[in-house]
Image (cartoon, rainbow, N blue to C red; front, side, top):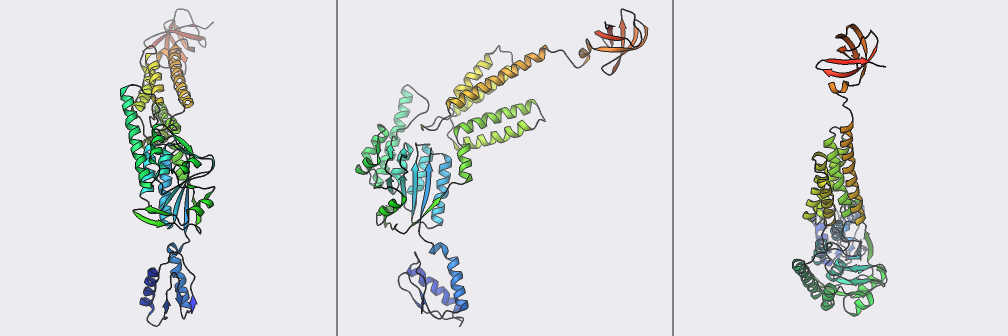
Length: 474
């Protein structure tokens, strides 16, 4: 009697189910299976070539059930953006497909979008796989929205030299008055209630959670452990797994004991999709794409058939609109920005003595400043980008204005008016009122106040209907 290799996760009930399946299909004397099933052990008698091949195929098709247990590591570094949300969503799905024992979310963030934070917390709270949020490496932080992620985790852990807190809602634009105060209080109270609810759910320090929102309190890892903000201080991932072993947690209203000593770490790395979303959802990039798209289409409409500006502008504008669909755009700021561009362009066609141009620049700058008015200290358009694009827009306006004025100063080069001061040659001379001349490839009737001769060079000084008045070239 030969023993099969012990397989992790292969329960007694599952073994009996598979063996009944074998006996059903192979009881017609192909081979006889005799089974003794101990806990996570299989013993099979009378193996032949076909029987071994069948078992091999069975194991290959059953790999997801027998795969070695894993701890899936998801790494979040930087501001929480829609790209972060997409990456974690795919990471959680990957963990489920791999039948992972736990998910370790290694965190280092200054904060991010509230909508993204709540979406990530929803992934954590509804996960059937235990989620450990681990603030690491040394020097990392879970600030602002990161504090909410730490509190939502089934197990919260931090590395030495890290900190957590400063979770107060932040507005990017300075607002004053009763309305602004009421809006701030509303956001603060909402954040406090949400964080306290997470603290109650995970049995963590709710009072400190409230101070992190109201007073922007922040603490280091050792103090966080003492105040029951976290459960574990771990030097690295290996130490984290060691401390997680045999820990009992509550997941989906049931108690589960973690067995992590033999887990294999599997890092789910960000791919090109994450990198692409990270780039275009950066407020600075989305802002530049919007302006590039608008100016590209403007040049194409001004010069139909040039193609290049239209192609670049169309692609840039579509990418900008896609990014704006993912970002919480302040539509008042977007309206001011577009109005400013319209005013600047209108100055070219409407004589306003600079009023439209100056007003357009002011609207453009103000719209750029408040374009992304979100509660995140790390999510805004850099003032250097705003200044640069404003100067480019002003320069564009001045260039177009200069070219327009300069075009009025140039002499006419088309039509009859374009013939003035052009030189020609006398082809036939009968008298002063019956002369034929050739100029710019055309033959004209002409008259002159002075006698001329064939072949003489003349200059057109006046046009009367279809006759030109000429004089000799000195």
